[in-house]
Length: 214
Image 1 (tube, rainbow, N blue to C red):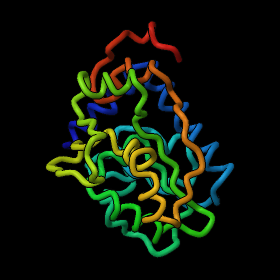
Image 2 (image 1 turned 90 degrees about the vertical axis):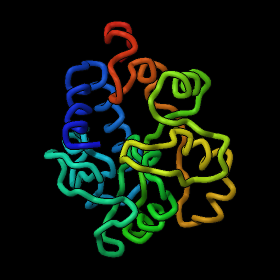
Image 3 (image 1 turned 180 degrees about the horizontal axis):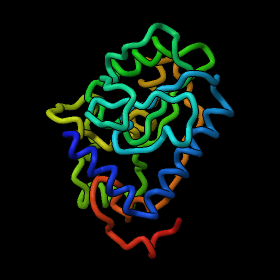
């Protein structure tokens, strides 16, 4: 995705009252969960281009592999330029499924995060309605049949939206065995079907804002 594309992502959010409120709600929920479970201090956002997490979460470095004037740093999530145990938290909103070498990211996160810290993530949910829309009405891939966490990537927007299902359902035992340092604290849906029907920030609304539950 180019700088222009990242700007389009931001413009879609800015123009939609529903998306602005949905994003703000998710950011606030991530902060609440992190405050309840994780050490406070310097935090990192992975995949922040087009969003506004910095407006909600304090002590945050916003990064992305894409180019955007709204970022603090341009960073490859699989090669984090931070010292060992220099971060308290890593926030990911809809960005894990865009990382083609997820194992490398988790190893980098484990290296950079301090004891008592962790990763706070929101990813596409795998509910029945969401799966139908992801498979037939969304430009990104949704593949839960693969046994690989990696995928071929030619662009930062290439992805597998089924990665969360693979990690936390289909391959949960393998994930916990491979990364015993990562304790899964909580899994639950946040925004419900309205976010899916909105089309998110990747496309224009499937329904007008007035029909979507805030």
